[in-house]
Image (cartoon, rainbow, N blue to C red):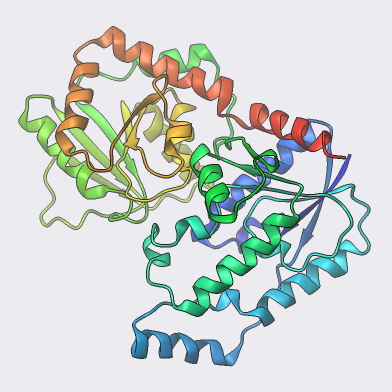
Length: 386
């Protein structure tokens, strides 16, 4: 089967990818590799050229200053039409049997094709309204365009694959989709992995009984729950468990920082040096802690599991599809730092139990959270489409 893989970016030029889309775009490249490994051929149909509209800046200022609302220019019909023009022009020459998109609705806008269309995404944009901070104060124009864009394009999809039960449930509720149209298949880790069980067992054995190393990864300290992660580490130290909080991607706003906090800053995993540093941090950590306030399906949870690192996170968005009893624990968004401390203390006091959980986390990665497994599932779904 030949697939037309539509994107709003150049799949083969990672240097052009903005930092805030690295996770999504990297996942797209792994999806291509995984589907090709399953015997499918893919042709990238990219609408990656951008134009600027002079009036969008004025509209943004007007909404901000007069109405104290947010407006997003990427939903302007003229910009959407330009992306659609690029994609449709290339589709005319393509010979694919099916169209696949792994972003959101934007590359599917006004798509001209007789082929079946499959969307594989982490969630709908509508589900993020009043959930993500940057989509919580929208002007009416932007909000209406999101609903109109998604409603039209979701209905035309032959199959919609979401990465979590939460994303599927919210989409069904918001857009009244046919349940037969929807399926749940998570994504894999955005890291190359040839690690085997002996390698992971060795990494786990090298983690000392103390200090307990909690790894926090996130660019947005507030949204990712950095304050709660800090409180957990602080309380663990106060309660007698020596603990170190390692932060990657952002700097805690506390001044001065206590000695138990180690700030790494941003790591560019696209470079060999950055990737090696990030992998070393994962391998040496006891837990990944992510008490996030709003998230879909964070890749870092799966990346941690690929090193046999259990995850501790809030049960928001699609996290509960990733983190289950076999690879960590999730807590209510209303839970305080003590519930995290109680769980960590209980696990860390029993070395055998910790090692079993860490090995189980790696097994969760091997059996349900790696690209080979999930692209095999996606291939089966795609090949069943008539």
